[in-house]
Length: 79
Image 1 (spheres, helix red, strand yellow):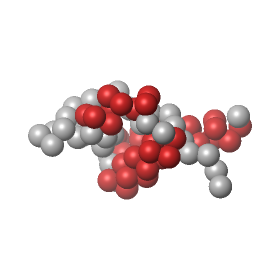
Image 2: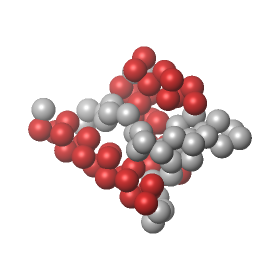
Image 3: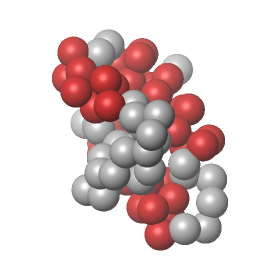
Image 4: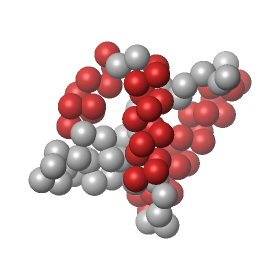
């Protein structure tokens, strides 16, 4: 089993909707605030959720999110 990707999924376009979910990366406001304190498994679960919800389209933000995940995954495999 591969190690979870723990790099934060921020693509520097923070804008929260009325449900306190970032329109760009899909994390909740609380997930963004507590990211450093989450376990690797919790971070991977968040990545899995947001790649399905915010990283599945053809928008610039979705492409950036997928690219960030792939880059973090490749870097982690090298380490």
